[in-house]
Image (cartoon, rainbow, N blue to C red; front, side, top):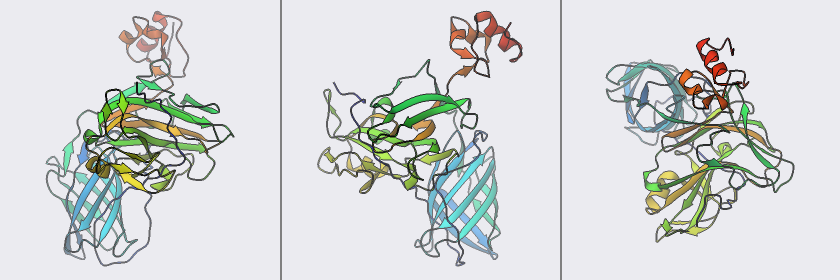
Length: 401
């Protein structure tokens, strides 16, 4: 019987996020890291941005552009997108920013003609979903029509703890590799007591992996992202990878037809900054395949071994209509010794997994039916009995008696 714990080779994953679109004939300098390093505990955004037109007013004249794609993390509000200048699509830009409540901030960097030119914008979202505000660098303002932003539905979050792993397993973790839940007050999400830690020792055969079964048609997968923090690694860009265990031709009975694992690695999307939590948009990025495999006439991939050829989620959905994602997760593969990295808020198709070393007691009813045995005080200490747990909640964390 097929299992997501099947061996998955991984070296270093690569990914690029793409964003496009603005044009004003002014040169400038600047680069854009497509990793988003916003506040670790930013307010949950009220609005989701959608592809739309965007008009920049520069020198008193309007310049109409198109925001062609946009992906937003519903927990942090960080977003990336692509677009182009409508009158001349050779002008393209990359954009990254944040939505907090009804406030929007962003940076756009040209990637086509006039590459390197940068615009920084600040705006607000109106009740009808229109967005407007100011921009710099010889421009005055921007405007986007009604419906550009739509209200976020309540996000689906699953809290994963050592006491309740919610279907996650250490899968193909090998000697020298370890998966642990650690306390880290800087971790993203709410709650944010801690995160998942993956480590490898000095041997090249060590490996750390944490996977969850999926059994989801690839054609229905639209949202993939996660957050990472590098504490130490064997090279500057080292970090935990995001993996999709895939049967390219689907499952035939219990047999995986066209087995491979697609691997996304942060350092191919931007700059990995040690000690800082960064969010990565896997759905908009590039992945390499762990194997050469086929799932049908148009569905053929070649092993990348940590590099090209690369595949995107969109291209795989088109080429492999029968593909099934059997599992997803995070990984440090072999040939990556002496890693210490963290991962959190792993998003698979709209369900976000928040890794916590424990859950703080905030509800008296949760203390009942032996719930007190897995709940903790804010400092991580355990309760002696149900009464101590109830007392802690009733006193707002001041008493366990």
